[in-house]
Image (cartoon, rainbow, N blue to C red; front, side, top):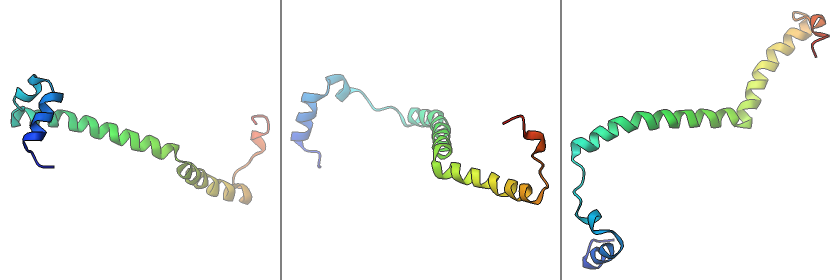
Length: 89
């Protein structure tokens, strides 16, 4: 879409006059806001990805398999005794 007279007229009808006449923030201000918000959003995004990873059934399955395999080998070899667990389950 090109910026022509029709687009400007439509914007003037939709947007309040203060929006059209307000100057854009200075580059320094934009940079300061970006430096402040970027780490916060990065941290939030990392936490969100980690939560999704933990809730993913495939991840849970891999975690259980990682625990199961060595425990099963120790149980079968007799290295891990279960006699002391009889009253806890």
